[in-house]
Amino acid sequence: MLPVKDAESIILNLVKSLQLQEDTEIVDLDTAVGRILAAPVVSKLDFPYWDNSAMDGYAVRYEDVKDSNPDRPVTLEVVEEIPAGYSPKVTLTTGKAARIFTGAMMPSGADTIVIQENTHKEENKVQILSAPQPQEFVRHKASFYQAGMPMLQPGIKIGAAEIAVLATAQCTELTVYRRPQVAILSTGDELVSPDSPLQPGQIVDSNQYALASVVAQNGAIPIKLGIIPDRPPELKSAIAHAVNSADIVLSTGGVSVGDYDYIDRLLEELGGEIHIRSVAVKPGKPLTVAKFANDCLYFGIPGNPVSALVSCWRFVLPALKKLSGLAHNYQPAFVKAITRHDLRAGGKRETYLWGQLHLVNGKYEFALAGGSHSSGNLINLAQTNGLAIVPLGEKLITAGTEIEVMQVGLT
Ligand code: AMP
Ligand code: MG
Image (cartoon, rainbow, N blue to C red):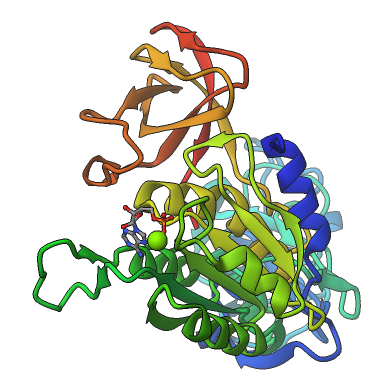
């Protein structure tokens, strides 16, 4: 059985990221949030666009006011008023000032702002009560960004901050990677969809919905291919169709050692190369990972609903993020937390116990979900935001100990 870290690195090595040439599309600012940038953003505009005032006050020539003090204030003639959005008309000469407001453009001839608190206004004159620093409170053109320089790099996820930057720079059309397509199928004769009446012995297919949600939350397109019975011909054609229509395929069920577990054999018959058959992890040991000649990556995930979600969070998501064009940050986020409860494991597999992370006085605490931690119980998964990790070889971690917790459910 493969240790978790080894499985993770095999999977990441198998991923072929989307390509800069073929796998991109153009989006506008309204639809760009959450997408991965695929080309550098360069603006034609400097930022600030022009010299402007950082404060409400007076634009002056430093030379005129450098010796001002409360006892001997310098008096200047106010020749123009410059609100934000107005283009100044007058060039300041010696002895002149302009009334100016935050964000407004500096008039030519001026080099310094005196804040209004340090002035005294008299009709069309202003007294400067104390000397400013040279160039004080002037935001200089291009001091934050110079036109033509790289502004944003490919491989980053576009969030609200990037949208603000792009809007400011008037970059309204962006090249982003297309969204990855993830085909999802549930296998099992016992399965019915959530809206079908339940017959004795049947089980509702929750996996299809859970996995599609993870995929959609992470910016990819889920393609739900439905429930496939445990019959090799139907399974084989469903898998073949999935592999030919998606970047990643997720199937649940049929990867254990039961009489109806056909997935591995069918993957091989269809030309898939199997790289992983099981991982030393609980839940989720019988994980199959195969790669096809068209670069499609196939995850045969155990059917147990908890195993399915944990496997998806732990192994599928990093692959999906890498494939999406993200340049970094595709591994899960792990945080240190103090466990509030004893954590038990068998010792032979790295064990993930679900529960909740709480931030208490700036430190994380982990509370184990109440109820059974059987991988057949799925009800107490609700509101999980962390998986506590009991490392290989350990059977008991006592309450109060610092542990590692994988954050889940983040996007
Ligand atoms: P399997 O991996 O096919 O042996 O399935 C293991 C367990 O998970 C069985 O109890 C199945 O009924 C259950 N199961 C399999 N697929 C699903 C699914 N899509 N949704 C919910 N439970 C499932
Ligand atoms: Mg099954």
